[in-house]
Length: 141
Image (cartoon, rainbow, N blue to C red; front, side, top):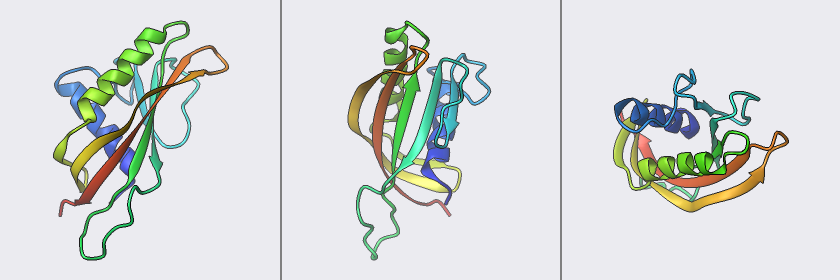
């Protein structure tokens, strides 16, 4: 299985194409979504999914993994409410999802482990927000 950050990025893009516009890598929605460790300098409206430490020590009797991801949302300069609204849309679309297959993994459950946390502003005065999710996954094959 690949990194959870890639899977969650792909899941958010899929959700955006079938309903509420979350964003996509090409930024055709005005919001770009990236997996990895750093946000690009542009566009202003950006979502970054980062892998975190595992939430639990896996039980050797089960095939589940328990990764975590942190999602960072950066809004447009001077538009706190827009950034907060995007973070809310992400939380509402991911929290509580069960048995979702993404790439080569089945996510048994996705749970928001911390609510939206305002991180202040970056050096360009763009508002930043953080959310954290605990995942339970296994191979879909």
